[in-house]
Each structure stands twice: as structure tokens, then as C-alpha cells.
Length: 86
Image (cartoon, rainbow, N blue to C red; front, side, top):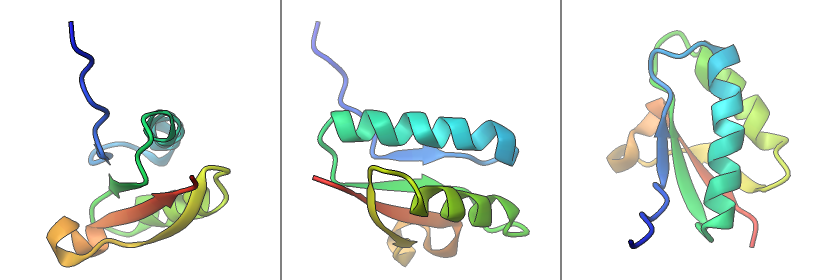
């Protein structure tokens, strides 16, 4: 049976910060192991609480080279684009 490719995004809608951050770690680790170089974390616009927590967490993550707000076609301010290290 062929392996399913790793997804290049994760949707955190309806999750709390405490629920979301461990999933972000798992997603980034799996993405790195799958040799993905760019991924997207969908957190929604809302109040900004989840977005801010994700940004603070991702900026300190050992596998992250750079993060920024996603382009409009990838979700704009409701999504964070993450570039992983090689």
C-alpha cells in the first residue's frame, strides 16, 4: 500500500491554545520528516489569541527558518506560512 503524502497544512479552528500547540509541534515534526519546505498553519482571524500563540511558538521552534502571514490565496491573516529548515 502506498504511503499517503504528508499534508502541507493544519487547521486549528475551534481549538484552544492548549490543544493547538502540541498539534503544531507534531505537524512541524512530521512535515520536516516528509521533506516539506513550506507549510501553512490555519488559525483563523478571530480575536488573535490563537494566532499570537502560534506565532510565538513557531518563531522559537527548532525546525522553523521563517514564518509570516500567508498570502491572500493561502488565507491571509487567518493563516501563518512557515518555512522549515533544510
